[in-house]
Image 1: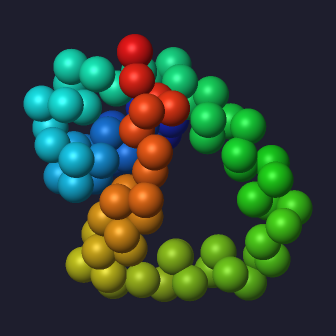
Image 2: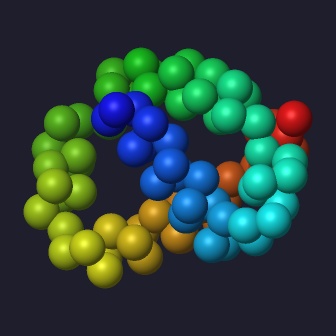
Length: 81
C-alpha cells in the first residue's frame, strides 16, 4: 500500500507539472518504478542521511513545491510506454 501511495503521489505531481492527460496516456508505471529502483541505491550511498531528514520536517506546502521543482526536471522520454 505504501508503494502504491508513493507511485500515485509521483504520478500526481508529474501530472501537475507536465499535464495529467499526458501522464495518463503516455507514462509507463513499469519504466518509472524501474528508474526509481535503480536510482535509489546510488542515492542512499551518495547522499548523506542528514540531507533526507529535512524532508521529514518540511511543511506540506514546501514539500509540494519541492516535488514540483524536481518533477520539472524529469526526462519524460525515458518513462514513456
